[in-house]
Image 1 (cartoon, rainbow, N blue to C red):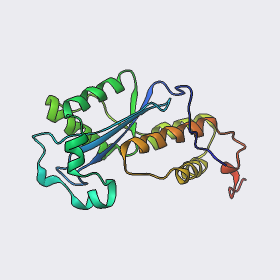
Image 2: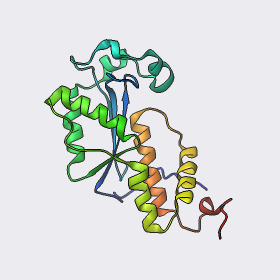
Image 3: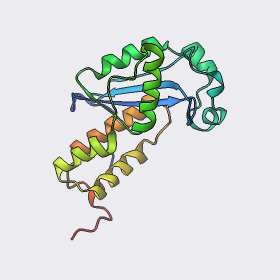
Image 4: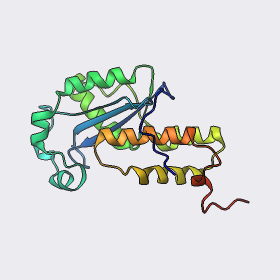
Length: 197
């Protein structure tokens, strides 16, 4: 059963925005190199981020470049936007919305790093978890239990695996939320191999 919509014609959760960040590495001192932002009408915005002067070049992890995100320093130099523009874009996206991400601890670290570099202060919002807060909330309203929720998330994820690029990854979460909110409760994805009492 194809659960992954190619087109979403309405903003079905207008007070939600989903973020993802890619970074120079997964260590203390790593810095953001790409952000993705999605609203729930599949309005996707993503951009590479040039290195801010305060971010140390030595914090670049060659292994992360080679094995995770495949973003090079040259790509940031030639195609990235300035950190100041990234902050302005992020500020606009969160106005009147709750911000979610699939990795609140890491992504909060990187968005704060970005805001501190540009403004001197942390980001004026705190990420909530897209699975445990947003999707679990939708599931609860529909009477979908945790096991069935994970089954749906796995099914949608199998139709569009993570790319470790911020734009496609936020789009996948919006499509997952849409599928969760709109898939009929009788759909086989919920009941295949699911034992009922």
